[in-house]
Length: 326
Image (cartoon, rainbow, N blue to C red; front, top):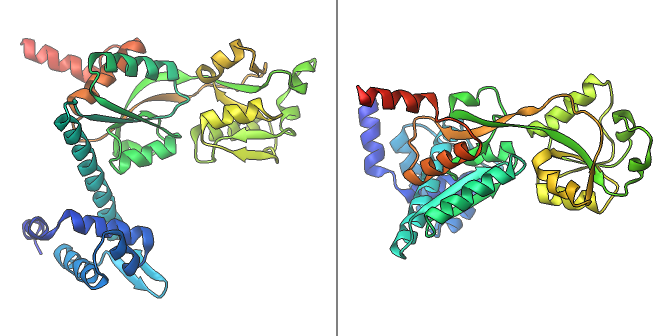
């Protein structure tokens, strides 16, 4: 089947209900459960799946004894289905906000350890300019943020790459570097020691980010360079807020971004240990999907982030201005 004929078949036959079915099938692996999730009878769901696969011209799911499993081409199709549904949801939310007198929806993913003051200032200024704009900030780790961006559930992200091939899917604009600090609660027994070394700390309890996070990878690299084993007593936690609470209420050690712990240290709630981490975590910045234009509210928010980070406009924007003057 030619590309033109395939495209025409998909335009004529593919519906959002079909995309919802694909996502439900991938999540449940069961036709009966997927049918219930989208409120149709199982025979109808079975006919829908057959129609979808006929339109594409290949199988999206393998039928196995333990349920349905996506094929390699099914995974690609499923990624599109999730993005399309997320885009529709954001469109519906923005449209509903405008219908009620608002000014649309902006959803941003952000690693909360990355300059929370920078993010807060930009949000505050944007809301001062556009009080009826519905702004949603989803705080996660970088690997979770990238997944949200891939699925189209956020407009753009403030984070960093977590895989060397992600530059093929996303554009990246650096914003700032991030210094890390080892912290404990004030009054922790280690604070009374004459000298503190990393070798002595690894025997203590730790609260660490998941292994997939850049901060955790940095920590493990530091241990490897020092020829030290990873701590045995670990709580893995992807939440900055929960990590702060755990450290303040236990004898655990944590490694967190300096901007996050700055106010807690000043207030005497936490103590930053005098140990050099070795190097800064790789810089964070603005991640956006390639070949996809951002709406005006997102562009304005990015401009505010640049200004508060004291960065000049990107080079490509400057070139466009020069071209217009000519």
